Image (cartoon, rainbow over all chains, first blue to last red; front, side, top):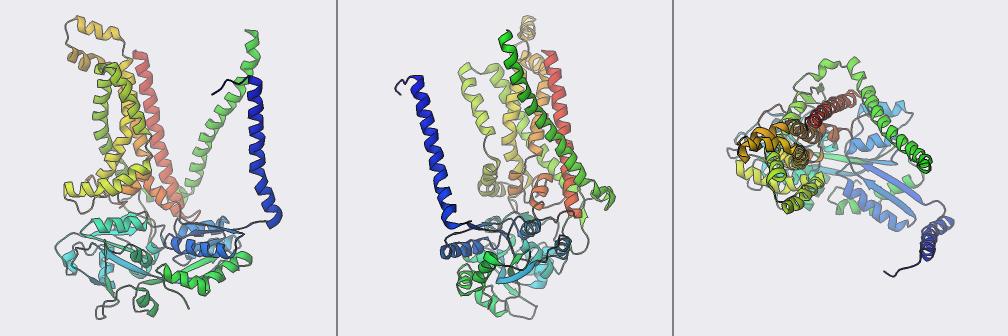
Length: 294
Length: 292
């Protein structure tokens, strides 16, 4: 570095500072001048839906270049809490609002509106070496509530079961508890993992493992784990979860996915929800491994 | 001199303000935690916390027993200290008493680097590498266990144990050792009978500080313990710690519900424990200073 006299240094620094200020101010100033207030939208909620909602947001922003949509996960419950606290415009939810949350909303003078946007099958996955390839809902319930401990109780090898579940902030956790466990409690030694990807990872690793994940994840993680066929009753045939079998209603563990707004949607929020329910939005639903709603 | 007085006041007040703000914030956190947890005493009652079932989300009846969580935290903490303290202490003795100057210069900074590894990185390493390996080694049904977490936490605790106890051992006055050598004790005898006992309060402080660090750790334990709320003292089983419970469940909990209050009760218990540990560490450290 050449030696500069102190005065010159001061000049250089000052000039640099001025340049910085100009360059950082200018584009923003021009942007607001021409476009008016940039339209921003925040969507928060279900981890299951995060891929889907991001895909929608990207397509929507391409059609409406001046909108900015931010999408975050965290779980359906997290999304509802944010919706009621006013920190998000839309809550993506893989379960319906619980009575306690509806009550809380009413207390705040809100009347949340639910818009059905897709359906999702919940797939049961096991280690590829497991000889069991189908279970009835009844057997699943016994596995997840702790009545069964060993795979030989359901026609498999003599090997202890390792039961994986999402943690309680997941919409999948609540749906599974309500519809498969028939509102009974999970077994205490079920391992609760903070993310669906961690469940897939662990089931691929442990020979005695069983876990549940959204259908979209199974489409992505082909191989590594085995997807079980499910019998809705003991005398029914086993059905594998696919987009077609969920759509026809044959596969019995499927749930609605929805977008919630704090009040009747209007403006940009309404446009976005219309987009998701429209033809293009529903094609994205299909491409993401979920099931479209007519 | 007089020229400095004015500028001294100019420095004094901003610094004092900064100090008081942080103390004030600590006090406010205590008050906030207490305020959010207190309604739990009135409604479900404190006896609810005294149980061995943690079932915060149920269609029948919720249980908020802290038993499995406290036992889980203690199991993970004690196991990791059982690994970190002996190895950390040996390292500290070596570095303080036996290492050549250049070894000290190279090795001490390496422990500081170990202390700066982000905990989520350690957790990820645990999930992908350590857990499968542990599963094979012990023939477990799943690698997600208290022991996997303890090993990773031990890595975090070792730098604390090393740096604090090394400092304590080096602060033992040389006159003590010279006296010991002069009456005919060997170097090893001096080390074990004189130097280490004289540094004992400082070493205690190191252990207690490490314990505070480990019991408050969250990210790593969420990723590798499996989070099953069962009461067990077997480190090869899955456990759930207090910190993991708060982090996993705080996001979805309806504001003001019993579950929400229960999570704050866990926070109060946890804060109480770490606060107590810190006080103990400070006392021990003061005793060390008096010694030397």
